[in-house]
Image 1 (cartoon, rainbow, N blue to C red):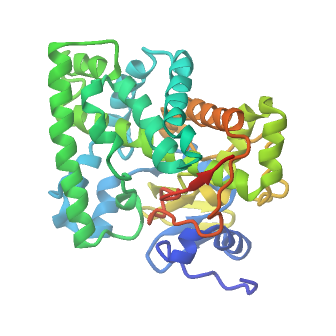
Image 2 (image 1 turned 135 degrees about the vertical axis):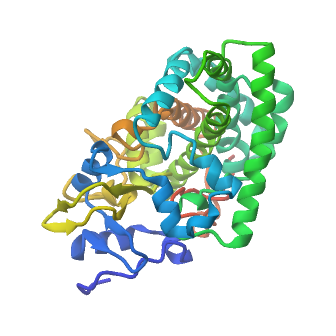
Length: 405
């Protein structure tokens, strides 16, 4: 990509999913604010993306409008689309303000910092299961199980119900991608949404009868208080918290372990000085974010970098590109676990900043800490042949085989 022509945007191309960063760099050099054939405006500079994240007045979600442009007006009865349309992930104020305030209140009812000992116990329990085997799949045996068990704790999901979530496959991020789902993909997404409805309705009913010190109980109490939270909103947002609370963290743990072993000198730095690990989490999140993109719609004409974007246009803020902007970070394609002043945009920003960001940081930190302490000689024998999840928005390896001596 040495010419000055804006590249074609093919977000589901296997080569792009394998490594989107060359595309991002070329895009930023030749057309940092550009409208592509699919009708989306792509933003690849750190400052532009940061502006979009914090300016919800000029860059709103408008999920209904975006879905209509993507699928047409007759698809809003699809269970997957109807479900996500009720979540705080895609709604705008005032509904977003109302729903997020309730969830935030419930989320902080149990201090995330107080969960650290429990998170470390979960990590150690997962590693105990595989320690004598001399190897594991980092994704299936650790990165997936850790955040599933942690979010089950937060949501008050009974121990007896957890096996179905531990044994489930990846949550698909395809419905968030700018490329529309095929009919087959939509059918799978609908089936997953309906299964989620059934389970989370059951969980809410359980917590109405037997309230506990958990997030679901707090949200059920808010629903029962009146018109503050509808039953459909309750179900959808508990489902969102479950899905977002584990899938993105699982991807980030996988990305982090892979990045450290593709840069073995950085793994050695953490082995020699584990005190670097908390700050290294920010660098690892910057280097290869589990969330690569977030979408917005312009509410009025906007100018970015001398380029005029009309009102009612769909904008894709490329978080992965912004995190490697050389105007923001020296040697952005280099991994440096000692890098200072790292402020990745991976957790979003503004009113939609990820509620679970601090929980995710603790989980990533404690997972890496345990690997460094318990398996310092861990290696990834298939490091150059990684199979990635087939999603542009949510990035992470499907499997990641590790061995140790």
